[in-house]
Image 1 (tube, one colour):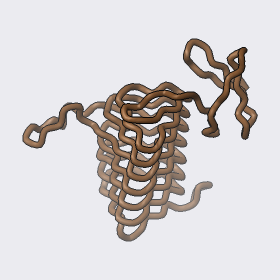
Image 2 (cartoon, one colour):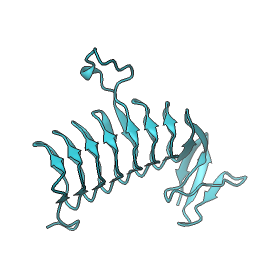
Image 3 (tube, rainbow, N blue to C red):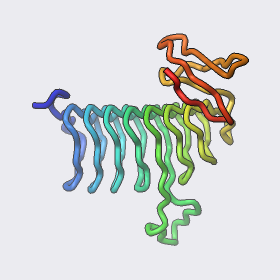
Image 4 (spheres, rainbow, N blue to C red):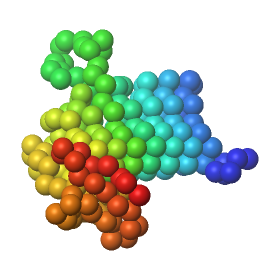
Length: 194
């Protein structure tokens, strides 16, 4: 047994040979982990989730019900995926044309949140600690710490690592109301300074 505790797999879940799953991970009802998928430690995978094949999920990721994570998606540590989040992996899919050699990579940065029913069009990376609002359709890259909403996604502000909206003063400094962490906005980029 590790510091994270034992792996928990519900009897209705299916884990294919070749999948690697870290300690402390829980896989719930009717989920399917396909071959060559790597899932880190302390990951919570909700009901009716499909992951893989050839997907990487970091440590301490939370994947809510009804999410499908297809080939080409990489979720770094501490990512939150809300219920029914959708990822695509081909830019121009056609039923009659096999494009399995054209999967496009999409990377979700450390600590990012993607809200319920959001759609991430492949090839549009999500920066660390970004916050994607529920129902948002992401059609372009999202900067670290960006707050985006709508269809198509529009940036409406910035958030800190605790997920609270940042309000910058005239010196371009913001303080998170919960953590008291400080952030600086410079050239349309946010950086945590303490």
